Image: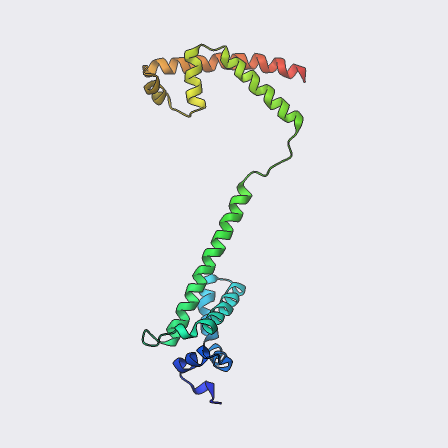
Length: 192
């Protein structure tokens, strides 16, 4: 059995492709510390770098036959494998971080409180009734502004009315709605 420490890298990779474990061990001994240093610079985590290094040498074991010495040196191939695996790991870590952040930002589903639901339903009904007491023009302007999010200029364009008219109707509608809601909510709160 030849001494693998003296064999050139290309020959070692050909031996690995034939299933020679000692050739893989020789490649590992020769380049693992260099590749680990590269992975640490990319991943900034020793644990992640060690995991990726293990994946790289597993890939070398499985794909050594894919190495084409006419396209470059064995060392360059190993560095390319390590860099690609590290970037894949960074993307996976980033995706997990984004998913965790997004799920933490989502409001958690809480058990519904029947009394709170009933109170909110009553509040919606009070607002609906107060809106019904406004003039049609005032109600339309307010609904376009607050339900559809239109600006007063956009409301004027949609209704084909002067901007000043829309502003007047919106302001008058808000003042009347405020007054109606104050009276209705004070009456509703007296019940609780």
